[in-house]
Structures are given as structure tokens and as C-alpha cells.
Length: 260
Image (cartoon, rainbow, N blue to C red; front, side, top):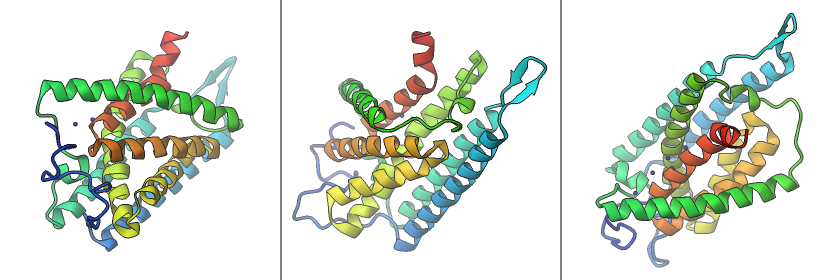
């Protein structure tokens, strides 16, 4: 759910996501194979817990008190989402750091000029419009499934909306680094194929959101391909983070306010 350099995309001597270097350049690993296996196990474990918690709660249904239906508090989900994303992000950074890398190895670097900020905001805005179009088309093909746990975690009050924005910003930053900065680069190292790396991380990205239901996971996997392609094109994650964070804020809260 958020994030860009002077022009790392045009200066190949600077560090940055290596997954689309020139064809004759062999991809390099950014962390050990054991570290990658650990990452997969951690994400699978978190996903399994999320599925159990989400669908266990959905099966129980809302709690009725007189004529009023009480909804479960979203704060446990918000708290665990932030802590989980920060924890997995730290795990990714540790693995890269042990190989001599830095945060820039994962993100492609930071902004160095106002021009760069404006450029990435513009790219993120256009990308988000494309993202919305693809999401709409995907939902026309994927049936809705009753009883899935997404609505219960969406904000209903101003305080919850503030919490949701924090969750969205953290997710935009952390999930892009985890999925596109770390996992996609590692898949590129293993497969030496940009296409396989992009598709592989997208499938795993969708699976990691399967606590929202299989239909949400499928759509998110499709959108993960877009995020992966954007990272390949830009050679950094700054526009990815901006678009990701904004899309989560919009989809989870703001669009319901605007179109109320």
C-alpha cells in the first residue's frame, strides 16, 4: 500500500532491482537460497493463519444483540497486518544485508529531485487508472462468493479510517519490497527469466491474500502481474509503492465515501 531516484533507471552503475538487466547480464542473487525458502515458509504460515482466522470468523457470523447486529472489531487485523508486514520486511532486509546489499537493493533507490517525485506520482496515477480498469474486467469474470471476510475488516468510523490508511501505507511500502523487491528478484535469479519471475511472484502474491477468499486471491494475482511489470519497467519500486498504497486506501475506504 506506497513509493523512487535521480534516475537510477538510466544509470546501470547504481544499485537497484536487477530483474531486468540487459539480456547478456546473468541475474545475481540478493539473498541465499535458504533465506528464500524461509521467506516462502513465513508467508505460507501467515497466510494459513489468516485463512483460519478469517473463515473461522465468517462461519460464526455476526453477533446479534436485540435488533442490532454487532460487527467484530477490525483493530486486531489492522495491528497484525502492520506488525506482520514490518516483520517480513525486516526478514527480507536481513537476508539482503548478509549478502552485502542495502535497502536500495530492494527498492531501487530513493528520490533525489523534485522532478523525480513528480514523474513517479504521474506514473503511479496513470498506472492506477490502468489497474482499476484491469481489476474491473477481472471481477466481471470472477464470481462473487458469499460469506468471505473482506467487509468486516473495512473501516466504518473516522478512527478506523485513519487506521486503515496506516495499514494501506505500510502495506504499499512493505508488500512491494517483499513481493517485487525481494521475491521477484530472487525468482529472476533462479529462473533467469523476467516473465517467469513476474508471473511467479504474482501467483504467490495472490495466494498470500487468499484469506480474503479465492476470488479475491485470483484478482489480486492478476493485479500482481501489473505491479511486477511496472517494477521491471521502472527498475525501482517508487511508483509501485505510491500506486499500491493509494489503491488500498481507495478500495478499502475512500471510494465508499466519494460514492456514498
